[in-house]
Length: 510
Image 1: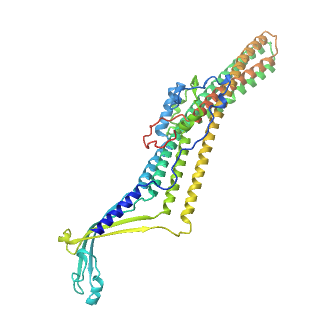
Image 2: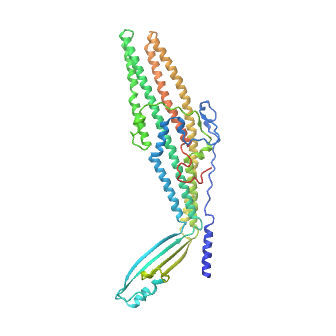
Image 3: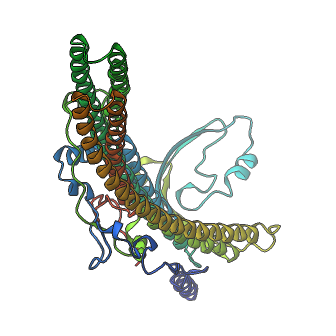
């Protein structure tokens, strides 16, 4: 009774120890100072389309819908469903979740079933004393004793059926810290998947809007070529009537040829964009040629961009959330390494039925059992454990620096995107004024030339200025859309909370 009470007391003490606070540092979210607002939004009339104050956190989950283009929205959704990179990211989440279960299994008892049938044939040349020495120290239950072994030259069959169990209590929280680290890694995988969504939505939108911009530039180039051909026909008619010289005809023919030169290159770039979109949605490069080859106008940009505050980035940017969870995992790894300094206890037990006759294998007299409790406490290991703790501490320091660097890079991304977007808007307005002035100048010089009041060189100069302004304006329209997409990416838009449904967002930065 006293032995049983001692065993119960020992097990109770181990369970109480296992419930204690794990060793190692507890994680605390980093305190990162961010500016109260973006410098690029401080004061500028050029930034009027950007919303400087938004109540609460702005909703950027499906920002591409703000362009009002159903084709763009459809392409983004198709990319979310079929893009291989996104599928790989989802697979990594499932892998990380499985790793959490692997880490947690070390804290649970392991139980196994064993069965065995053994046939032994005794040597004819072995004396009874040898057999007694061989079997006299036999195990408990039905297996022991040489009397049941049989004479030399005989044999017997032994049947065994039983259970094995082992458990190593997590006395100082090493397993719990390992599970904590694996859980943080799994949550980081979710945020990495969402960061892939942000990048993918930006790639699709940028490629699609670039396609529409190129189609717009192609339309401008084709209209310019048609205009130059009409003007060539008019000059040729005037030359035949003797009102102008062949020099004017040659100069205009040069303009016609020059206006046709950009067309093949623009066509190649358009096809390349279509191929890129096909791959982004998970199809063959030419899969979207039929539905995207027809030109379409650039969709208008949203009237306001909900920029929010720099502090919103800490919650909205998936790469920041992933880096923060990596920092949490690195902190937990310190505790897992520290637990190696402390003693560990392992409990093992076995219960089986052993018999030389199958008919009485499951009888009470065939019972055989054993138990073992072992203590392990490393005292001298050449400094390996403490060196490993130092390694994990440096890894945590690196993770903290990586998180800080990621925050600074995110702030820079937004500031740069705001600056480029606002600057391109200013440039676009100037180009529109230049285009309108160029159109008026071409009209005036053509009338003066037809009336014989101006030289044809004036017409050529005015046309060249107009063509340059129109080309730059078409490119600027595309650049505005590109800068806007970059801004949405920098703000971390493109994911919906809970849409993956693969891992809970426990421990996220608030």
